[in-house]
Length: 433
Image (cartoon, rainbow, N blue to C red; front, side, top):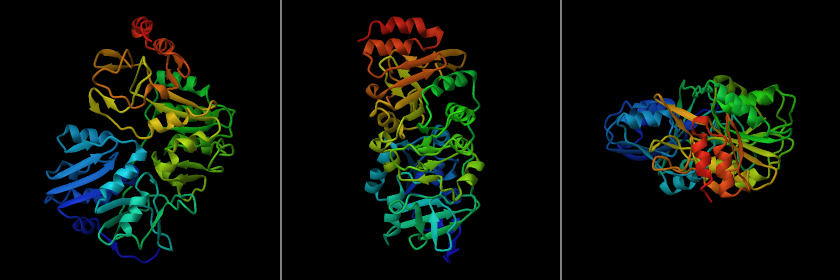
């Protein structure tokens, strides 16, 4: 390991002003020991922290004088908000985080990294995202403060040389912390019978040699498992998030990345989250490369992949084909992320498909509520516009919307609704367009 002064989390916290502006990357980039240590200080006057997808309940965000401005809510943001913390949502897709960071010009940047190698390089580990350029700008500005926290549990991952090295040098880092922090253990949710039915429908769109994008959750995991156990293969991966399911597909020998338009020979992603086995598997693994989000989520580069299939979820879809994926009951639930990027990228070529997979209904107490709606109403916001929606799948079937008229789309969606609501939605669809 290259010699460099190692600081404690408390020493790093002491370098932050009581009134200051700080920025973090998204979830897997968060330096856990440093953020917990911030909560031990109580003299904050106006500490503004900018980031997304908290992976722990950091006490600093419950203190007066501290604001967390998040571009993507997770369970921690929702809990802290509901508990009275000063948590604010900043609307933006994932690609937009970069320009927002550049304009914000935070005095402090903080990130998790892998342990420095013999030459003093620290891999950015599980996150490239939108913060790479700003980390380098911060590290090269003597008036700013770059804090990096490494742990043996964070894997050394690779970028794509020479342009995207996916690493920081210790000479750029102002405060280097060693900790025992571990990446978030994110297991997939348990699958229901409805999820299994949806996955079976989705599987019919994935042919040998297809390039895949998947998110987290029971349905993408089920689909990856079906592909891993099936007779097909030759798949590629071009995915904003790299998951445990995608690792399983690699381990089954089903990923070759041989038929892609760009980045042939390896899977590309911009961040990873899953179970501890995933992080061990990613360590020094040349099969997966981490690139900034403006590359991975570029709709033009997405469209260059052959037989590209995007697999995402949704909170609700209305009969117009509008998709709500980040709000629930009038409140922010998650964020835009790359939802629209991958739906749009998959819509630029005839052979590509975008699948939105969701259960047809949900229970609110003892009441069943349809997730296919006549219209979005006042409590949901549109994440993806209707003109980009391609395929919607529920446990009751498939609605292919591309190229159909307003009336035809509405009828196709009504027919895959839960039976309790289907007749009313079919009647409504006949009045549209």
